[in-house]
Length: 253
Ligand SMILES: [Zn+2]
Image (tube, rainbow, N blue to C red; front, side, top):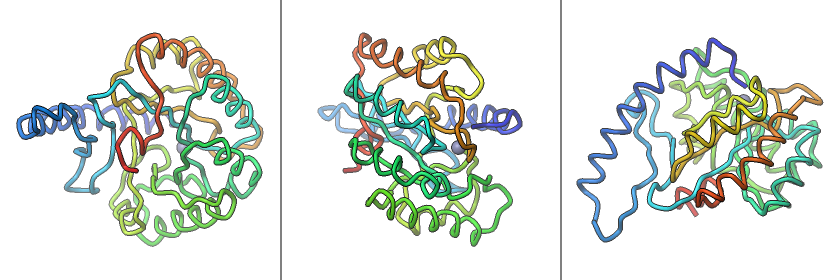
């Protein structure tokens, strides 16, 4: 979930990132083997300050990654049912506190075959925090998620998408930082608006950010998310997209 102040900051940063992405794509395109025809995952933004992060997967194949933050929640099982009904794989960035609160749901996400990432333990913003704080947040979440799901995440998404110097810690823990191409804003828009927003911005290699929780709130209302996902998957399939996990989309496996 993104408070308005964060969203404004993200818009500013997104403009800078878009410029950097364009520059990187041009550079990579000029270097790549023409026979391969695939662009590498985009890791350009803020490299000098915060280290690399993935904003997009391979753009040469018609796939997108649905990602869900802030879970698991009491409503996550309904989302799992929807994804199963459509046969779509997704990636869940869990908070450690929610996984500790609902270990059975966390385990069910993994059992359903989805990828699991780290979204910190307590969902506190990282800006102006020490490297020690960030390390503790990531390590605690890694421990709880591994305990409840049996999987140690390799991906990490910072709370509120706020990158910070301490995010370098993530690399020391062998975590790849993952942001997004499309933010669904499903915590404040209705399902129709979320669908329209995502469909309009969907592109090959796109990473779509939605939410199966609302920070650490118990029993969050995610009806807009659930309805949007149910409508989005067939719409995107009709446009030729397949659904992959972030690691599949970026060929990390
Ligand atoms: Zn979040």
